[in-house]
Amino acid sequence: MQHSLADLRQRLADQHYVADQGLAISLFLALRLGRPLFLEGEAGVGKTSLAAAAAAALDADLIRLQCYEGLDISHAVYEWDYARQLLELRILDAAGALSREDAHRELYSDSFLIKRPLLQAIDPARSRPAVLLIDEIDRADEEFEGYLLELLAEFQITIPELGTVRAKEPPLVILTSNRTREVHDALKRRCLYQWIEYPSFEKELAIVRARVPGASARLAEQITTLVQSLRRQELYKLPGVSETIDWVTALVALDRQALDPDAVNQTLGIVLKTKEDQESIRGEKLTSLVSLAVTQA
Image 1 (cartoon, rainbow, N blue to C red):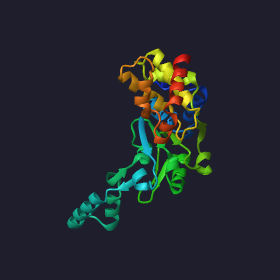
Image 2 (image 1 turned 135 degrees about the vertical axis):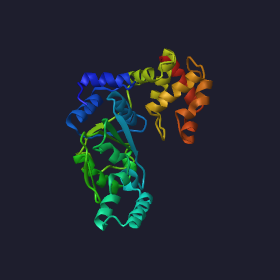
Image 3 (image 1 turned 180 degrees about the vertical axis):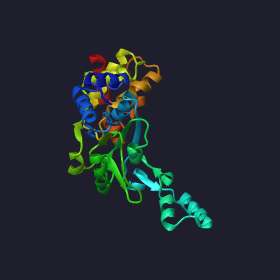
Image 4 (image 1 turned 90 degrees about the vertical axis):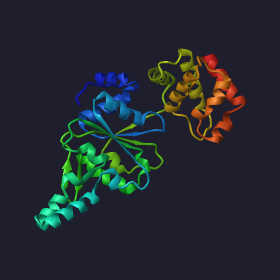
């Protein structure tokens, strides 16, 4: 995966991902240095999308592990196919052909191993490069973070019955966090780090134009202006770039070429995802924001 910085930015752009210089450099260094990339930022700013765009840009397989509370090794790394092992054991026992040691070696072999995302990503038998996305690591338990340390440092996993499995070609590893809790320093030390801010108006407009090419220039500018204004309000959940894209896409589907108050009211749930936020914005405040967006764009 050796690419120049300019080439990498162009490849991301070809996948409709607009990366600023800082983010592009972090991704470039993660590839060049063989280090995981840890991305933090508010929900919807493009952390997960970067992994998908990088996989497509690098012609690699995207392997995603979605983290959640209670995530364990059997769902993230591997587990044994106990039903097939039991059947095989009965066959071996009936045949009486193998010793205890041979039976153990036969049962705990690769053919009975169910490979979950982390093991899939470093599988030495892989024929294609991989991008491993460990999404929303802040939702997993701290104990799971500890398990990741070996993988992030050495690109290897130890399986007691088999030994150590080590990647022949290390994957590009991207971890994301929405900062619902602090991730341990030991994990961060093994990664390059990048904070992704909400984009400027110019960058967000470029993203909208790249992702929703069917939108009129006027609609794209007005929606981007309005979302930027909404982020300056006192809301429980500020809208991310993904909501901007969804809002423009929805209005295009409704054949809108420009903003109007009725369309905004009818589709406000696309961009504001809580009842409290919608109630705090509707009425005169929303009318004023829409009017300002129409005037400025």
